Amino acid sequence: MTPTATATGRPSAARLPRAYLVWQCGALVSKVGDAALYFGLGWAASAHGGPAAALVLTAVNLPQSVLLLAGGAVGDRLGARRVMIAGDSVMLGVAAVLALVSWRWGTPLALLAAAGLILGTVNAFYLPSSGSMPRQLVGDEQLPRALALNGVTGRLVTMVGGPVGGALVGLAGFAAASAADSVSFAAVLAALIAIRPRYTPPTEPRRGLLRESVDGIRVALGTPGLGALLLLVGGVAGFVIPVTSLLVPLLARQHHWPAAVAGLIVGAQAAGGIVVGVLVARRGSPSRPGLASAFALAIVAAGQVAMGLAAEKTLAIAGAAVVGVGVGIFTCSLAPVLLGAAPRSHLARVQALLVLVQSGALLVFNNVLGAVAHAASPSWAMITCASVITACALAALLAPAIRDARSPQAS
Image 1 (cartoon, one colour):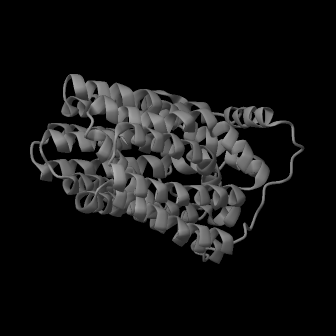
Image 2 (tube, rainbow, N blue to C red):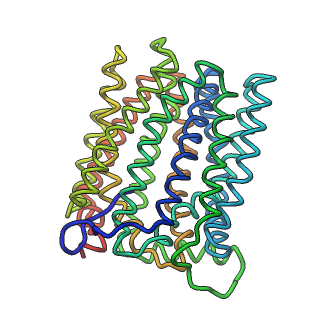
């Protein structure tokens, strides 16, 4: 996610706090490990066929979707840093065990599904807290630059993590990717132990976890226009995120490309987003984020068509880069609108709802796209994604709540 311009039209030039930079460095190493693990998980699952690969991804998204609201409430109650330290500690051990077990017995579908269930459960508590950290480590005037840095590093990780995951899997299999992820968790654990949040949410009377979870929905939906934006994000996520995690491995196998090529395709999409993120960090995001998001989705659809029709790996890589540019513009345009309005007392809960709409969409559409890829071909599944994204672009243009959206700083 990336920033809007400040009242002067430019991002704040003040240096970001040291605690935020330390956290970003630790998170950067951890995200590289995560990207390698997720690539390895998708690649190993794709060997069992499209429906099996979708099943493994569903194993990640099912517990994540069910537990997200509770995870957000826990993050606001206990503090994001404490929840993240617990989650990273658990995942360090889990990744190490996965490396040992897969090295000894390979990657049967049951092991991959079990790994997905554990990852999804930890993510349900970790992601809302992680998403709230920029608001807790920097002041509001620096939030655009902090989000820009977070978005650029995230895409950089995806660009590097795809090829790294492909290389690790190609050289030593899923066990190598798991071992690398286990080592990476030590870096973010050290960073989290070393820092303290600059801001902490105000203390609220405890009313029970369920009531606190529901209260997050009330706050999010009580913000004018936020419901329509969340619906758009969910629709887009359902037909953009599976491209790299599900369809790229299946496309690579369809064309008999090696894992390293699939990793390059994933990296090319991230590279397109990095270019956009750097430009937005320097010059500010669009003044009409709703219109910009519609334009961005048209770009995404065009890139997906190119990937679906590609017979050569170079065209698939180019199409992925175009998709990355469109996704970058979309997230840069809407991130401030979605994230800037949350009260500090509900940071993790609003983040949980944002992740939930995406996870819920993936829970359904990973299986739909896996079935389409199996019944027709991965190429047709990619064309299906492009068709739905085109419809989302039209919806963004026609819905006033999206078309006329403004960022808080620009209001």
